[in-house]
Structure formats: C-alpha cells, structure tokens
Image 1 (cartoon, rainbow, N blue to C red):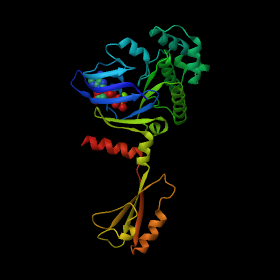
Image 2 (spheres, rainbow, N blue to C red):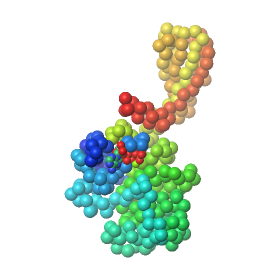
Image 3 (tube, rainbow, N blue to C red):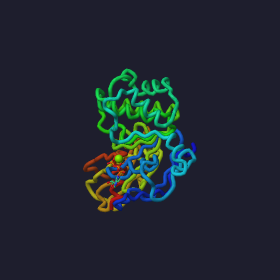
Image 4 (cartoon, rainbow, N blue to C red):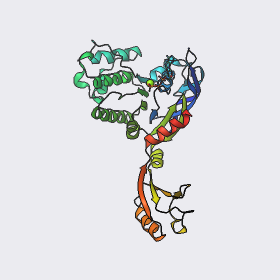
Length: 309
Ligand SMILES: Nc1ncnc2c1ncn2[C@@H]1O[C@H](COP(=O)(O)OP(=O)(O)OP(=O)(O)O)[C@@H](O)[C@H]1O
Ligand SMILES: [Mg+2]
C-alpha cells in the first residue's frame, strides 16, 4: 500500500512557545485505519489540525495524495474529512441541512442520493429531518461524522470519536468505521480507549510529548503483547537455572529465589504443565506461583512513562 499522507520532520511551536510537535515522521497508508494513542496533551489534536491545515506548521512538510498541504491547500482540504474533538453543530438546524451545508462549503454539486447513503451508513436516516438539538450525544457525534463525509473525502480524521459514548454505541461506531474502510476511506482516529485501537486499527501509533514513540502493525504488537509471564517463587534459592530446564524460556532473579517463565498465550501448548513437572524432577520446590499478563495498556503505559523520564 502506498502512503496517502506523508508527514516529514514536522514541528509545531504554539505562539506562547510551547513545542507541541517535535519532529514527527509518519506515513499513513492508503486504505488503512491508523489509531493514534497518547495521553492528554500529547499532541494528537495538534497533529491532526496541522495535517488539515487548521493550524500552521512551524517546520517540516506534509503531503496528502502526493500534494503539499500548503502549496495545494484547497485541493488537499477537499480530500480530507475532519471530525473534531469538540461537538460543533448548529442546534436548530436539521440533520440533512447541516450535512448539505458542509458539502456546499467544498463546492461539491448537490447529491442527495450520496447524502442519504451517508445517513444510512451512520444509522441516522430516520433522523434526517430532525433538529440537531433533539438528538442524543452519540447521535450528534454521528452527525459530525456525516458532515465530515459530506464532500466524499478520501481521508477521514476522527478526533476522539467515541469520547463519552456508551459501550454499545461505541461498538456501533467501530462497525461504522469498518464500513467506511470497506468503501475505501483511509481513517486516522485518536482515542484514549485502548480497546478501541485493539478492536479496529490496522496500525497503532503512540505519541507522547509531541513525539511518536512507536508505530507498529496491530497484529505484530498484539503478538508481542500476547506474552504472558509466570513467576515461580522457590522454597530454596538456587545459583543458576538447572540444566534440566534449559528448554524453557526462564529467567532467574538476582537473589535466586524466583524464576520467570515467559510464554505465548496464543500458542496451543504453553508448556506450563511440562515445566511444573520438570521443576519437580530438577528437585526444585515451589513456594508460590503468580501469573502476569502484559497488555497493550502495559506497553502503552510503559512507553509513556519511559518517555517521561
Ligand atoms: N491553541 C493552542 N495554543 C497553545 N498551546 C496549545 C494550543 N492547543 C494545544 N496546545 C498545547 O499543545 C499541547 C498538545 O495539545 P493537543 O490538544 O494536541 O493534545 P491532545 O493529544 O489532543 O490531548 P487530548 O487527549 O487532551 O485531546 C498541549 O500541551 C496543549 O496545552
Ligand atoms: Mg485532543
């Protein structure tokens, strides 16, 4: 897949002197769903705003569909749909008029059939003529998405699309995002919900303090995280791991009192039963056993803490 958005050495310093982006490099592939994870103030909204041309770059270069965002601003903006973090809707306008208006802003000819399709995709068709003020919070979020899709963008940015949305609606939103992906839209979403990234992203980028800490295929990341550890505390400490146990992925703590066994939760055989038998055969007695699972959350928290040092 080729890159539809290319971000090179992008820096952003706000007027007050705050460096919100510190040399971001990121390639977003056509047709993928990329989740941007990061704590409050990491720079997610700033990054999205600079790509969309709402906020100016201090340094670096961004191209969308091969066009420079500054030199070809209008063409680039037409290719992009943005769902902002804050709800910004005219309360007394009807749903359909809101999205007709958005489409008009981009100079697109009327296309009622397309707009109806967008409303159907977002399960909003029965609210087509309802006033925005009469909708629930989750529905309003979906109207924002409908507005962002009104001009048929190829790239859609969703800034916290499910913040404050209940679990069920969140799952509906995931299904919607997947539908859009199937229609060929490239999607970049920011989220604080790690399970959201797990559920829908093809790739995950972690950002903190204006820097990208990691970009990785979700499946590869999950495979890496799918590791589980068991800590086995021994009755009597040992100096080294007995040779009978050399086939297991074991680490001995410095004090010789505990063994840590790492295994892949996804493999059919974890080897735990064999290990417990072999421990006994090697003459080691267990005092206690604890399991430790690493999750995307652990990796995320670990990365962010490491970066904060
Ligand atoms: N208009 C602005 N002027 C000055 N500083 C800003 C402005 N907008 C954001 N910042 C600062 O830039 C940093 C990054 O903010 P940003 O909104 O990009 O974070 P975020 O990752 O989207 O956070 P959140 O998860 O809370 O939405 C923060 O320190 C923030 O205070
Ligand atoms: Mg934000």
